[in-house]
Every structure is written in structure tokens, then in C-alpha cells.
Amino acid sequence: GIREHTLLNGPVRRFDSQYFDGINGNMIERAARMTSGAAGPSTTDADFFQRILVHKNFKGSGQDLRDEVAKFAQKLASEYLDPSSLDAYVNCRLIPLDKSPGVRPIGIGETIRRIVGKAVAWCLKLDIQNTAGPSQVCTGIKSGAEAAIHFVREQFESESV
Image (tube, rainbow, N blue to C red; front, side, top):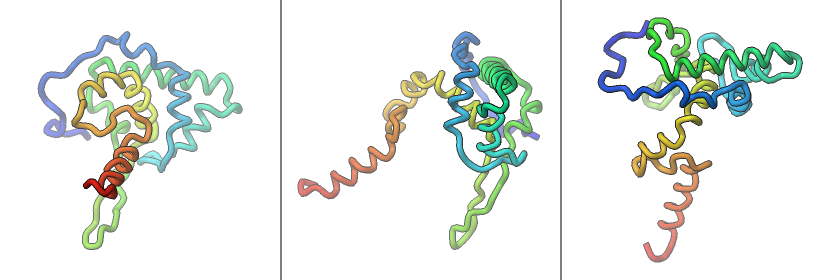
């Protein structure tokens, strides 16, 4: 379970639930389509969620499920939820990454968490950009990190440096 000492303490900015009204079934569909990767502990990977949330074979059921995931995302983002009720949601599957020498543990979280996270982050995009400011390279810019790398490389390769 979640241990008390692992939780962040201090003032928490609360958002009005209306702040997340933009999270709806269509946003969850978009997030599901953009999510890729391996499965967490439940063994349900991105392809599985794309199938049940988006595939035409599920028609109305897929839409109903997207709407319910959207409600969950809104609740998660705007209300206090007992951390012990979120154990399955926040669990990760650990895999070893050989770093020669040594091993680095890599955590693969649940796919639904990545889908919900995208939707919540889209609602908070401007707040994240304003808060991160210059401390985060290219926040909110598509392929921003890659652009920054290319810029720095060009600067080092230029004759003036």
C-alpha cells in the first residue's frame, strides 16, 4: 500500500472541479489514441485500452467507458481521494535495466494512469508552463527537448563558439 512518508506534505493547490470540465469522452479517446507502451501490473497495455475505448466493435460501450474514465479523471484531479483506494491505480511493474555495472529499476505504470494523466495535463497545460517557467526546457512545445538539443549542438558546431 501507499506509505504515509511517501506522500507530499504541505499546501496543496485545489482546483475547482469546473477547471476539469473539459475532460470528456472525446478527450479520453484522444489520450488513448496517443498512448503507447507496455503494460503495468494488470498486464493491460496501450493496445488493449485503445481497443476497448476506441475500436468500432465496442460502439456505445466504448463511449460509455470513455465517459466513465473521464468522470474518474475529473474526480481524481479535483477531489481528495483516500490514498489507500488508489493502490491498484498507482502500482508499477518493475523491470531491471542493465547499466553495466549495476542495474536500474524501471517502473512501468498502469496504462489507464497514463491516459488519465494526459487528459489532466492538457487541462493544466498553461499552469504547468507558467509554473515550470525557464526551469523546464521547452514546456508545452511539441518535440521541445529535441529542438533544444539541436540548437545546442548547432551552437557548439558553429565557428563562433
